[in-house]
Length: 505
Image 1 (tube, rainbow, N blue to C red):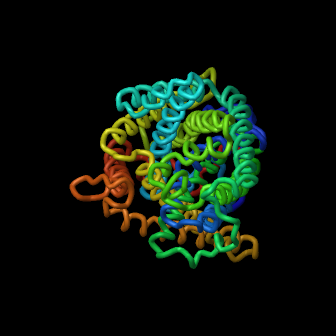
Image 2: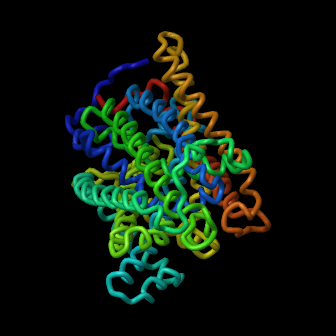
Image 3: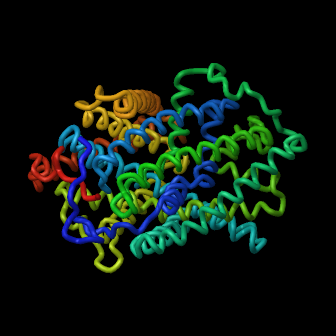
């Protein structure tokens, strides 16, 4: 199964037109960390997760990491065999055929569109908060609550992110080195100051190993909701694999970068989670983590009590984190659309690559337009757009990550018993990870039917989280049948097969 296929006639540009060999291991890890955006994800996810599981936040982060690392192993195996910027779409198609492959690609695209809208929303909130802190005009922070100002500002951020992504990976890489380094430095400072001063907070809790006892969570539904939210905070490392055609030694470098990125964020999250519980506690008053007024943006509530006059650094860190992730996250859907256009699952216009910057031109712009449009609609219909999109995103992530894990097992089925290594990395690990993710996905879908799951917003009596998560997947089925009529070659299995050569040496 593990074969090396010849490259195209171009020595430095592969068959899709992407420029190869321009990213090393460090650059891809930094882009992966940027996409995950620790400062952004934590400020949006800590509150909702604590609402579900209380002080068991650390163990939920650990359990949520297990399927992530198991799926990362599956991604690495598939990438070593068949590096392709289409990742889930390409691998699911090779394993299960074009119909399931299309839905895998759709799930990846949908997850990215949802998170792009969420990123833009957080960037808007912290942009106006930062302006208020810098100028001393408190009213500027309230501009984020103005619906039209919010949506218009979001458009500005999306346009800027699309422009940087369009300019190419060299521009993106240089931006990310600065922004990622800054946010990690501030998060480290925040955690240290919280742990050192927890006894002076008045609401703090002494560290306890009970926080790692999963049996103290009230129900299985609470556990799955917590895991779904924790899966969101790890999401994004797979962008490393979408860059495999542009990496140095793409068969190995991209997979290794994905694993390093996932392990790095686990350490960051555990440190910050423990620091927040120790300083703020899990109470519902003041800056307690279960105070509903704090849950949407935890760092807004905790930065000043913990960091004092340095709190402005946290605002700037979250702003830079969300803005940087907004830019780097465009890489994944753009390259996913590129692959789907290249193999004929979507219009060929999606396969256009800019001849100067070697970036997916139309796909990048399309991702920007769709993500901003989704954000604008969600901002109008949702009472808490950030919380609802995070919960819907967890469902989407479970779907396409789980599908990729099962694709790994089926794709390598003939080699599973040839060695203990193959059985573990190509069989057991992906199966366990895939099952865990699908269980969480199904439970989340069942629970989210109730409008109380999320912001309380309902559409014809059905929870908005269910409508967004399941509705987008059903929309993918409709798009799939439309494309099958317009572009039947892909759906007849003529353009992408199990033995289609890889595009990377």
